[in-house]
Length: 164
Image (cartoon, rainbow, N blue to C red; front, side, top):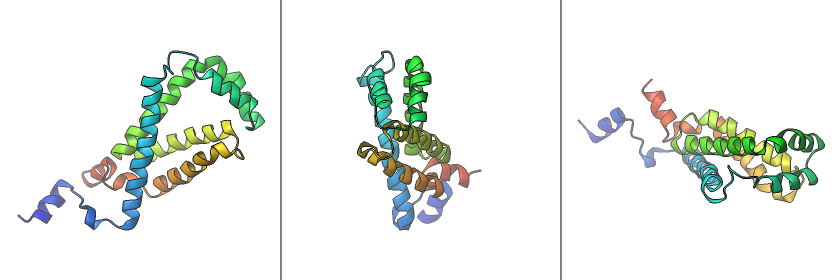
């Protein structure tokens, strides 16, 4: 049996057979997954984020900042009274997105959760705020990953699709 046929049977994808679009989706997916996973791990292990009121400082700054009034009201009336619950939800969401994108597993679902998280970060900062520039870039990148079905490029979504 030839090497090429055995690779096809095992679902192995060779990098030289990738298009530029597929390579771009792979790089974008891995970068975005790494970014979300590292953000989650920092919150879980380095800053005592989950078991303290560490999040209150930034939340109060967002309430006083340039964000939209409806989002400031949401932060003040819903998030701040339940700050530890939202800390856990934020870290869990980032962890799931990071793992999902890095593995290419349920990539579209991970992209939707990522989009929800980043839209919340953007709303907290305010769209016109220069600090929200990276959030806007991530929104475009996440939409590209979602529309391009990036999990099919060297991801478990692609493997599942070939073996379903």
